[in-house]
Length: 155
Image (tube, rainbow, N blue to C red; front, side, top):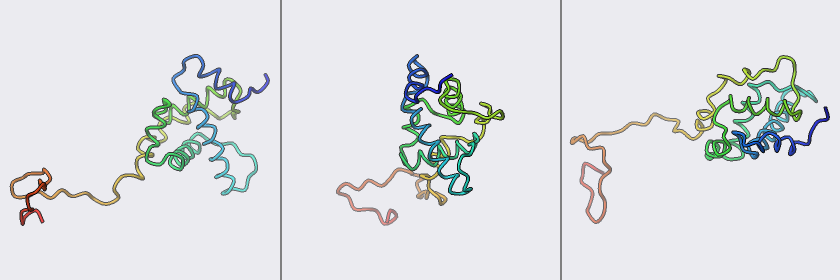
């Protein structure tokens, strides 16, 4: 079987009203390229197979680099909400011949590896402990400012 053009492969998969949007497949390919390039820097190996966990790590790095704090929203708009979704997309691309695979590759390589949403949100969460201070009235509402001066206990 002749290897299809990537765009043709995406049309074959997504054209039938699939779960994932075409942009998600293009992002996946770009994230795979990013991951391979990062691994080459570390290992000085020209062509190397990328494992499921390595690809998931690369997806997180690339999504944060490209979309920052909007990464979760962007990926969700394409139907991607978990590492398992990435695995399904990878194996859809393998089925149509757009991606290669080794004998050890399995869709389970992507299951339970990471919490994609958590990994994408983690860099934007406060790093320190957040402490709420309660006033004597147990009121957690912010003080009203308007034209009124602040009470001494609010300063």
